[in-house]
Length: 484
Image 1: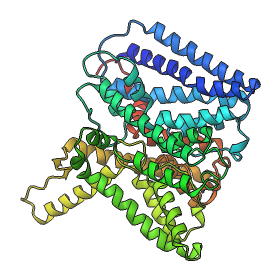
Image 2: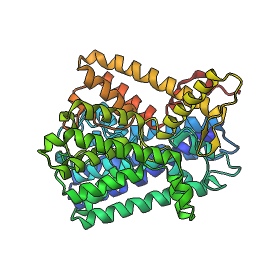
Image 3: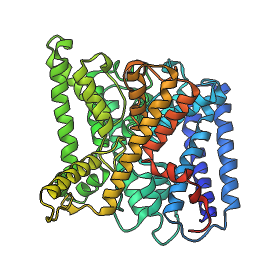
Image 4: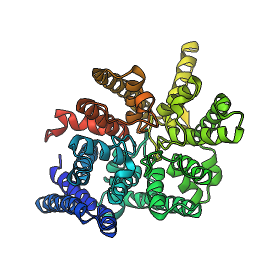
């Protein structure tokens, strides 16, 4: 195992985090809150010292790294960045308990949006900006950003980092060079984010609110700067977020095809069709189901249904209405959307539409095989055969997913909260959504959970964002052996 390349990459990540903290520190200075500036300066100093130290100690790092190093870099990188990123909240005293501060920042980086804060508007603008900015950084992936801006060596092996951090059953490079692929992904990401900010500004939203809202929308995170999330903004601004949340839930490879002029190929995507079909169908059913709550106001029912469906399936977590008060059918559909999630290769969470397609296609193939034992039944997706390795990966992922969800649900029951609270809290964190039902609904938060439950939920967030395997591999003793 190439330990030095792991240390050097972690050092680069910490140095990047130091730079990422500058905008928040600058906002704190503009607001004249010099008493809070020390929290940012102290955190930046810690990141600079630790990152610089690792880069110096591992300056002679060379050679290749493979899948094992890629998984370890991703797993350790997200843990280290979260541990340091929580310091501004803790050092400032605005979140006095470090476990709570860590919960908040992990929720940010993993784009979950679950919060322990009971009054968001009491927080300083500098910390609110950092809180929302973590969504944007975690949305496309911090390692993907590193690949885009820092040369990681020759040989093409840096694709292991891209595959370990990017969501979905399989990740391929858009172009032959990994760094160029990462640059394309972030260019599309930045362009869509800027476009979202422009549309929000056109609706009269302030620059600060526009940036924070766009970060949450782009990263499909859902941290808001208002206590009522998006409910207090105009219908136009809510509609902008509805559209952009759905756009950021699309596989970014399809945007690349559109840019290359291959629009028909992009529109033929089976995953995209499932994603759009689920959204449209869910909006129609929920709108009908909640119409009585809106006194027959079809426009209002469709508006809130569309916003909520877009928010939940993309695992963003913004809210315009308390959907915990909706009829059981609507709430059940929303819980199902939590699990399905967005497209692979997007900033959204969940198990991904592509996995759902593969599982159903594999089920169909297996049934045909049972009826006609001598027939050859291949699983195909997007016109191509799904390799056995990919199928095995999907089955393994779903097995681990169910086991982790069950164990987490059992551990949370120690807090004696309702079954609905515990189950949806696990689903919301494991699928990186944020709000669930009952005590963790759109008007609730996660402050009432014990430290043990918060730690379990933090692990759920990381496992969900990193697609389970990087953390599991990191915890395996065999991973750390020099041989093999």
